[in-house]
Image 1 (cartoon, rainbow, N blue to C red):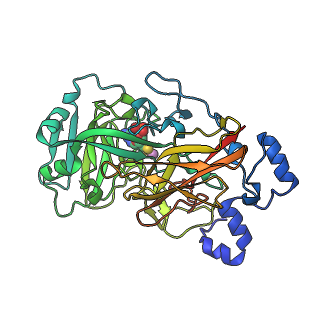
Image 2: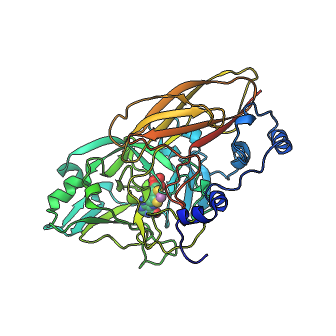
Image 3: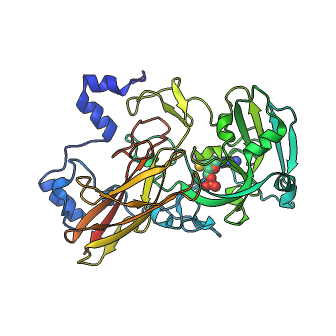
Length: 433
Ligand SMILES: Nc1nc2c(c(=O)[nH]1)N[C@H]1C(S)=C(S)[C@@H](COP(=O)(O)O)O[C@H]1N2
Ligand SMILES: [Mo]
């Protein structure tokens, strides 16, 4: 269909079709089909009566260990999503540490990984210009001695995290829920650098530039170069960072200098940072405008084509909680009835108010304990215990609710052509016995 249509229009005309488009096919699995599914899983499904019709068990929908693994010095065996550009996802059960070790950091490149800067890292040059009274040309060393150095735990999440849950499938890397990291970052506040340059009245937006070559090798093109409202740049958790977990930043993650813009799409955390420009109007580099990092203001029919004319730029990422202490596809000894659970939760610019867990396909929920974040934009640790009635196939569904009461939906919502902002609740399949 050529015209972009609002989902509510389709619901008015043909609610069943709208529902199928929004949530996938349903109504298929009953009786014999359910028994066949149990056979495919190799187990009974104790809560099958509570299973929504048409639901594909997570064990079949996302087979554990299906993706090829990244084999690289200094990196854990992450799930390899692409080699050119290099993209790799962290399995949820590898996100159990409070601070993500660098080898477990997910990798997202849009262009080539540049040659490692061979000089003294302190001589790396950074420029701040545009709508300022005094453009600054600083070395990393000068920046470090001139401005206050801070260390913070900050979540960084790709705008497309969770994308593979969209129906129909969208363009882009088919991330599960693991395009997220939580590092301990050391650097200076972008705000302090901007203030030192004397921002002009008209300075409303930023533009970020990095040293990575375009995938094609064409030196006149940028791999990615995005920007955001100055208000986000002025937040005291938006950093220009030069250390990660107490060490120089690994080459893959932006050595020797990168932005960290926590809570907003990871694409705003420019790696191999060379320049920030202030502008009076929204930046127009690659990764800006159209349907890039933009969401429909009014929900559109999943699968419809659109040029993104009435889309708006993504700001805060949505709420998400992960179970990290038990891997998807774990087999437990027969007779296991109590399972201690632990995980992480975050909510972009907001905080997490609650995490609830269900083992009966959402019929009932158990509240978990949620810790406070050590600083703004940090992860929140959650933990608790669930009880199981018998052996068999179970799914642990994890859903978080943010400080404004927004809860993770059952299915990826607000479909958009490039698949951003999917935060469907997490499902971990386990087999007891
Ligand atoms: N220079 C540069 N910065 C970049 C990118 C890139 O391709 N080039 N990718 C962005 C995207 S889309 C994300 S999600 C994060 C990923 O950071 P990581 O690879 O360190 O996990 O970096 C961002 N910064
Ligand atoms: Mo990203």
